[in-house]
Image 1: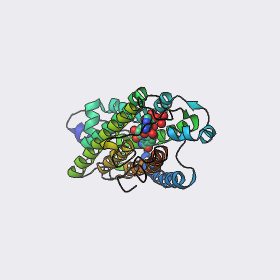
Image 2: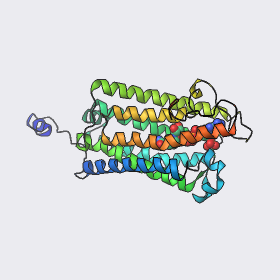
Image 3: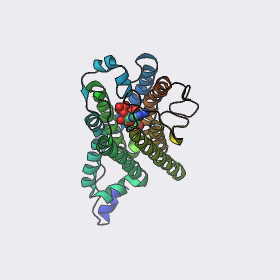
Image 4: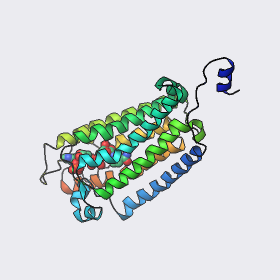
Length: 295
Ligand code: NDP
């Protein structure tokens, strides 16, 4: 017997169901399949065709490539605008679902503890990335408007897909629950990845006061950078792999984790090659980008 009918028979107010449009579960699955295909294309393109996207150091190193993507936006503005949809879309979905079911506690009860925790983790990451991270950037290179537009499109797509999967669809978008042990391990990996990402970005910010010969980049040192060039990217990849594990490797969460790896892996290798070329003889030749000693 449906819970709402039982509640009505017992005289309790029926809790409205979460707003899952009939088309949403199939759309979420199709969107996730599209993201997996895009991950393969992105990795192949960044590795074999285009090279790293021309923002940050790779935009400074190749101004002609950066100019093909249009005028440069100030780094803080670009990061705030391009990342905002990944925060705002699921936040608005959660707020409207919360009003519909009778408040945040009722929403958390309807979602269950696993989806509530994963939604909170996603919002925390993108709340920080779109509202706090941009304010803390020190002297970041301008981002070409075309690169920011691609990032904006990705964040819109991913924010809508993850928001719909988490807030609207539940089990209707495929399996989204993990065993209690896998859920705890996945969320612990998410937290460890977030800590590594934040600590590494903070270390890079501190480097800005020790500019290298080019006036911009100094050679990073210390345990975070002992075996890889980009611990911030490694932390980001670990975050989303853990988040997907905590979702029982649901298709939308796994697609995001795979896309993150496909996007950040080639860029991390390009960063490692940049340090080796810019600071020769300092032990950076052959250093890995993302995974110590491997990639
Ligand atoms: P980078 O590591 O390239 O740069 C981070 C900041 O530190 C920039 O402001 C950069 O300046 C500065 N910086 C980097 N290295 C040095 C150095 N050696 N000396 C001095 N300053 C330095 O990261 P991104 O800008 O690509 O990414 C920023 C954040 O966004 C990261 O946390 C990353 O994980 C995340 N991200 C996530 C993606 C995803 O797919 N989920 C995609 C891309 C990024 P400058 O801009 O001038 O180079």
